[in-house]
Image 1: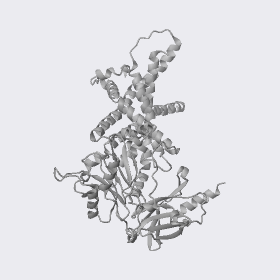
Image 2: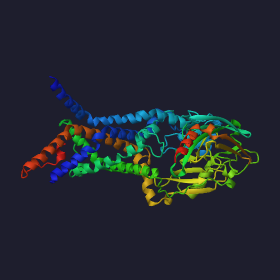
Image 3: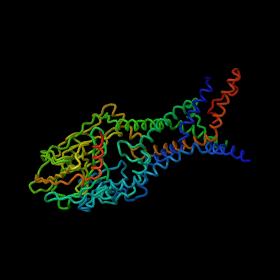
Image 4: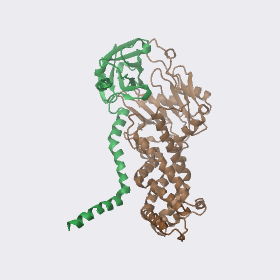
Length: 399
Length: 180
């Protein structure tokens, strides 16, 4: 096969990768882009979620003070979880269990401890993630088939990146002489746009497709009950580690701020951003947060009555394989370094969505013709093998 | 005349196919649309907006205490791979038991001691849940035992027929028995 017809073939493969499923790919890209900033969208829509500081120098309350303030406002509600979002303009997310059996996330002001409101019944964040992540197909027996459907898109995405770079000869030149022609008609414009955004998104498409491949592998491993985790399963507390009381009332639990101190002694630099209260009398208190490596969490597990540390999971406990696999999710979602990283992920998510659309527009104007021509050429070649090649232009110039 | 019209029809179809073949995938959107009611009813179930579970079993007296028991889903136990089949139950303790009850357990068949009381409930006394292992060979007349343990060390037990706790599980067990 000649060099030219080989590049034509690559070009056709590139065109056909997303084409028959372009709308599905587009919606997955758009919902993923929205999911990146879903927390911020809710923040914009819902003032109760904002952490307004009463005075410029007002300090943040400790977790124990937060619990006390909640107890005063809602004496019957039980705190299940306190989570401090990464960005300081968000209120604390506190999950409260109410006597009527509902478990609700409430927004608590980190400076005053005031319950500012309850998360709306429609959870936009969870919904966009569910739509993007598993196409809303329920998980009934292991991973949902929607999860497989979406994560399988990692293959055409990765293949699009590779074939795109193969057909775009000397693509690195595009970095130095960016071309975006507006006045030569729609086909030229969308072709330029597709190539320009493509080369600047190489890293992003690589990150998204590789992390999505991991999501697929993760589901396959889990559904086949294969575990690569080095994490020990912490058994429930022994009967004699949980005190009995003479008056028959629950014993006092350790002060949360003291528990965090104990955890920080064992794990220096631990940012306690997530407190999970014990699930029952024999379950531990769980404190987790980031350390120096923003992509992974470290955690401490304590006896909630004595404060004894039952176990801890720090960065150095991870195997090198886990360093890679556990970094996959945050790399995919972009939620590991505050608002700016999210905005970068959002921007490139939009670009990627636009690439699906521009790819489709180019195809409708170009590829149908190219396919017909390629077939015609094959026929011609069989008839006259010695015919000289007149047009030596690389195919992508004609996009 | 009739010959001409029959010759035109298939080509119309193929024109239609050629025009729309790459837009058929829009129909994939019907999948999330179809699952949307299920998604929202599950979200309400997990928030506790839809009560304790899909099927309430009722109030059960356990010594001086009582609890409301429910099947999280009105369906047969779900397979959990090597762990066998698990059936999810939820419960809420009576107002007077919120403080004195330390733990609540569920087991098929009478526990011999507190140490073998079965699976423990997770969650708050207002709404807690557990996954009960249901062996395939469980007899249809089996009893579901509830054990409640107090902070003062006291222990109380009660039982209800499994058929009352989960008719769907009994139906599933009967089907398992039919298998060779």
